[in-house]
Amino acid sequence: MRRSLRDLADIQYGKSPSEIVHEDGLIPVVGTGGVYGRAIRPLYQGPAIVVPRKGSLGNPQYMSEPFWAADTTYVVLPKNGANGPWVYYNLANFDLTKLNEATGVPSINRDWLYKIQFEDPGEPSQKRIAEILSTVDEAIEQTEALIAKTQQIKSGLMHDLFTRGVTDDGQLRPPREEAPQFYKDSPLGWIPKEWELKRCSDICVSVIDCKNRTPPGTEADGHPVIRTPNVRDGEFVWADLAYTDPISYIEWTARGRPVPGDVVITREAPVGEVCMIPDDVDAPCLGQRMMLYRPDANVVLGSYLVQVLQSARVQKHLDLISGGSTVGHVKVGDIRNLLVPWTALPEQELIAENLEGIREQLLSLRADATKLRQAKAGLMHDLLSGRIPVVLNTPADTEEVAAYV
Image (cartoon, rainbow, N blue to C red; front, top):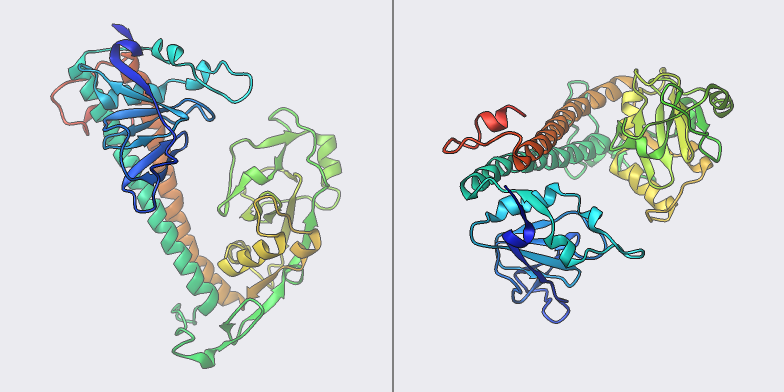
């Protein structure tokens, strides 16, 4: 049976938290983007769902404990017979932007929100659906926590590898505090005595910059255009990959044709994102604000170069010369002459191997997180619409979840 939100919940207004926000407050203040402050007392007790009223209209927030809702939100209070988490998942599954009637700042009218209808299977099934979806949410949170922990481990490992390096037996050199004789100072900080700082142009066969605009787009059977959104966190991002026609490809590759194994770097919005072009990217060209390093195999490994460019010291230098803002940019000459710590090929290989292992762990965890999110989307569609009825009185981690994960 379909029921409107009016039958399932009461909708109240949030209120400005300006008078109750305090640095010692314990009560979360919830706005359109989630929790953004702390208050000294609550406006509502919970359970409740905070729904954006103005601005960004997605991202409803479920609150099980006392909270304060900002004046840009509505507070949805489930009535008796309506399971709070179930109501939340229905609202999360609904495209709230459809309710926008404003021509300026997006906003939702409360009367329209009340009219939303959901398929109500009855309170026992509501609870069961919420349990199943909560199980997937917990798995997603655990996976994301593992990703964050692994990323921290990677950051620490990168710091050690690019400040201490490794010896022939694969062990880190002693810290400088314990063995200062093994180190020397440099413009990027302390590095092992055997290391040097080298300009990227001196360790690459070529450094190629792009034209000052992105080539015209075409259908997906054209040539891939590597743009700034396609380079994130050291990986090539296939999502939103653009394509251009053969004539434009010839024009945009007049300075050099990118090939797999080349290292690309963004020089604006954002600065310093890098990745290696994968083997399965066929005949690409560079979009605006992109540059390319072609490593000299006799001097530097591509797997080393792509990692050292992500190191904290190099990124800090890029941030400094770009002005330190999200809209900053780095000049072509600065990318050509960018200094990076350099060591002999055998040590480069050991460093790259150490980082490749943890990179593979991160890729695997991110793939798991993506799979879980896809499973959740499928479950929400099937269970909330009634397409698949739930089985009561069974653990929430059995067939309903396993069928999707």
